[in-house]
Amino acid sequence: MTLLTETSLEPFIALLKAQGRHSVLEVCCGPGEDGIMFVKAGIHYTGVDPYDGNVRYAVARRLSVSVADPARLPFADHTFPAVWAVQALAGLTAAEADDVVRELERVATPGAPIAVVLP
Image: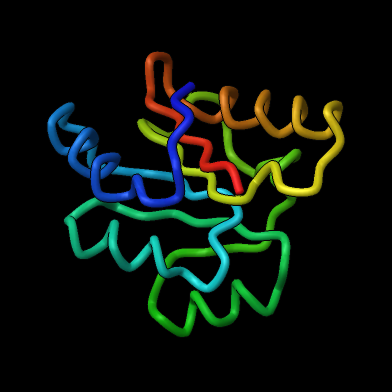
């Protein structure tokens, strides 16, 4: 797993492009600001957020986003070639954070870059 600062979206997009990864899952996507950047970069985007209001806003921006708990993602194992998670661990206990990290690893393909951006 890669730990990045909040300003690291552009290098992450560059990494995905350099590695030929054309799809990303964003966990805790909020209203979709980063999703817009992924789409503009030509990367297929899927987002999830636990808050319906964020999802409605992101969907209104024409992003593929759904409501989901970061600790119980509604995807099959090894689905995504990259994962971007901003604020996904914010405010969680150590045990809750472990559950989320396990989920990120579960839905990522083997060797996929997983970026967890910490607050």
